[in-house]
Image 1 (cartoon, rainbow, N blue to C red):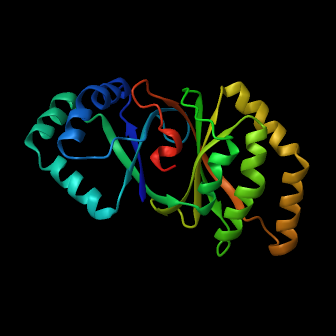
Image 2 (cartoon, rainbow, N blue to C red; image 1 turned 90 degrees about the horizontal axis):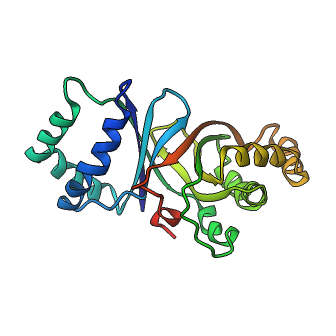
Length: 237
């Protein structure tokens, strides 16, 4: 299964127009051309190069994606919708598209939630975290055994964990956290940094490779749209 994160940099003052298009115009066109239903849609609350709209799809493979987008972009009806909703200038000034596949640690996420499914909106955090070259398996193991369990105890819910295939520097791990609120996130991350098991893991990494398996990251704070609450495990559970 292939995952696609589509990040739309909105023209100033046009975010409402993008939201309206995604809510009112796009669903019928997706259905018409046999797209998978989006597994999440968000308006970015904080991140690089704002304002930003983010949505996510999962595909069987690249051929599946090519068929669907080829049919959509070749449809005169979609061209009319795009021109009408753009008005005098484009609503989206740039797109960033990231392709991903599940990391092995994805299989551990249901166990961290104790089998419970929570689709309340909350505050989502998307991280693109650089991985030390040659150490993706070790980074995956640290996420599964140390970081994700610790973040869960600090109030986060890990929604998905992926290996970036293109669209971001390689190697990169991408993962989604859901927090109850911004305040809960601040308190949870402060606690996470002090946890003995997390500190011990970082010490072991430096002793082993004079570096860390997981390094700096880009962070986006995301508010789900009312019509795009993310599916549990993004439909890949």
